[in-house]
Picture 1 (cartoon, rainbow, N blue to C red):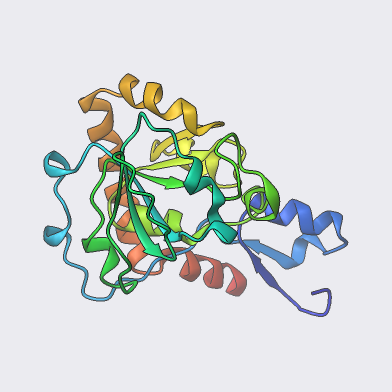
Picture 2 (picture 1 turned 45 degrees about the horizontal axis):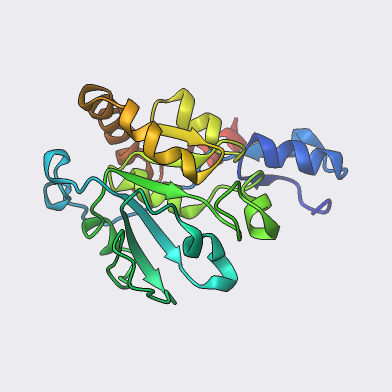
Length: 219
């Protein structure tokens, strides 16, 4: 990586990590968050706020090898799962919808929040995949936001400050916190989050962040 003139890194946490590894800070540009391009997106076809299920969405690779935490979810919260390799255990609080192409998925998601979590544990993001959240920009974060859905994210994730400071969702340290945290959010507070998400979703769908990073190179 030291051979490149410029490097677009995921975020400031990744930038700091690479700086410690000897990469010149002046040669790194922080993207901020991944865009999620959706050609011909029709916002009217997404699930309206008032019709969203009172559940938490999990989208992505649902295999035990990648996302063991899914098989240890709290039973006092309803979850809607989308993706491949799920081993359905027939639990009452989990509804599995199958897998969909990336351009169709945003129109299928139905829930109040999208969960950004990884690793083998529901008690904090553990293991290699879990700890990587401290550095990377998970693509599913952009999926949820581009789809107009607020986010629940691990509080130690690199993108947690972006979510919390822009009021795009909430951060938790343990999945057992979700039930109580959701009960604390009023309809007015949720609608405010959803409106904030709506503002940024258009940017994500149209490549705002990668364009901004490339334009900064010219300057």
